[in-house]
Length: 389
Image (cartoon, rainbow, N blue to C red; front, side, top):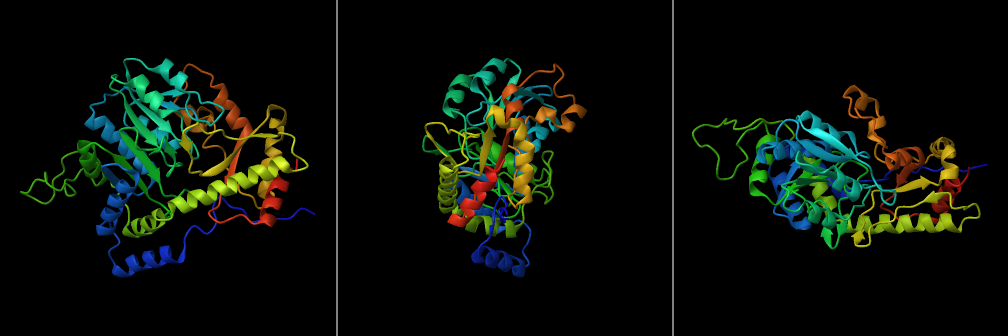
């Protein structure tokens, strides 16, 4: 008889101090964005080594706001092109369309599922105004190589780092290479406040516009340039993407433990892979991500890519894992051009093929990596189920 296990994407995300700080904010009755949020923004920017950080209510909002600020601050026009990998999340893509820009899709590589630099290079033309990178599950492409390719071309880089907070490439944090870096504090991510997100930048003009457009297009959050003649000055278009103080309080406390969390996730990943390879049923069923040489990953999850001869077993594997309490997810969305919503907006008019994204969708899935040491019994049950097909 096979043993059931409780193995969600993330277990016990909040510690006692997180809850106490959240309760303290609620008791203060200052729930809307205020001093705690501003303090967290300063600590976050200092932690990553950037000049500015702007907190929002989700990672999706971080992407939305970055795209619209990029459009208005850098004078992008309707129809300008933004390169994006086919393996992406929906709210990495939709802001491009919502801003009236044109997404141009590129295939990914099969080593770490990030956008192919060679494909990006082929797609760059006079209409290319931005590249939106998606750092997948804690990994990255050779971003320094990409920046060399686009040097002098006036192309913006937006790093969707929602799955990769804490990862470093050549000793520098992902999300700090481009014009904008976006982060998510959703429940299963590297740190969490339930919901919440952050945008970082080194450009003061962009920073001020991020704050304006975060809150209705209002100038209230400007420190020096605010119009003093009246209180309600709407100086640009905007949204309401402000976070709650309780989210900032919890996320700020979790940021202190990010390095500890990353270390534990990495150790658990290594344990699972080693146990699988030592298992009596191991027949090289899975390929594992091979990070770039200079990358120090802060893993979000443990992705698996089935070898060709085992791909037909994927649905059986997923069904079995879920049945015995092991939560699974696709690798982001798979090939997003296969999603129903992409047909509504006719995003692949030329019926282009993206074979690597297609293979990742057919053969890939991931499980969580926890921030507590895996016990030997848990490890044994987990690996038994992963190879029980």
